[in-house]
Image (cartoon, rainbow, N blue to C red):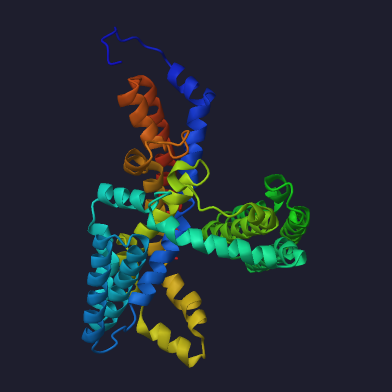
Length: 441
């Protein structure tokens, strides 16, 4: 590679190859899969910011801090003496205790510092640390999971068959409740003129998609067909509401944020329930063979979830938390006082006061997170997996590097980079089109 042939014009040959080969679609799918962790990261940042905005000082606790330091020193001595996994567990427990007790002693300032501290750590160092944690044979993660999975297998083996068989149906019932709740809310918003037909259509698709794909996604999942029936009924009710005249009209894209964010969040919860139902269906057969801890980064199916877990840990204490803390400090206290006078519960205060006031910050965080998700993943894949196993963790940014600087196909790498630019530009156009209006509303 990197020879010096004469440069020739190939027209759109690289772009035609881009959309005809399987690699681009697979790596684009990997990028989108990793981006599914964005809602969890945003929710975690918001939860951390809400907790850290409270008064958390618990008085003097230096005695407990010193005791925790002594525990850590003792665990370190055991590790040096060869105690192995036991010392590691004691050490992790001691560090967690130091964080909790030290934060309670120092107040929310100490907690904010502790939460934000991982953001200062170099990315490569963090990736190497998590790679060691995920080690299948020597990592502390599997050291904790292995005995726990053995107990789970023993417990499942001793349960009656009907208990595990009812698990999928329970998940379907919960999915039905979520779909019904979302459909009723969409119908009410449509009737009151708070959302347009475009927002209603997108919200309905997001709401009903998991249940519709349940039979195809898990063909042995006996409750998949009823879930699809529930989705069809809910979609029919929403469609019936669209055909009726309503009290107030609005633009087609009115309430688009609600249709995407809220219904998208419900869609993620439905997929989680669908996955839990599938696990309950297969768990008795799996427990008879013994439940083994995952191989994490070396397993094709666990590599991307492993990176998503690490990304969630990093996102909770990131700049998003600081943005939410700044937004919470700017919420007018008069609104909370009015809510208290009206007898609002803490959940109602958050949903009707805090969440609407944080809408501009949430929109900014989502847009920037999507752009970063499309562009990111290079350092993580390069350091932890080199894009493997079998391309399971290769993102578009790492694909550009691999084609351009490992293989030497600079023209093809440029085509991938232009496709990535087009995706980011579409997200930017969405921000220009809808950002100012929804932020001002």
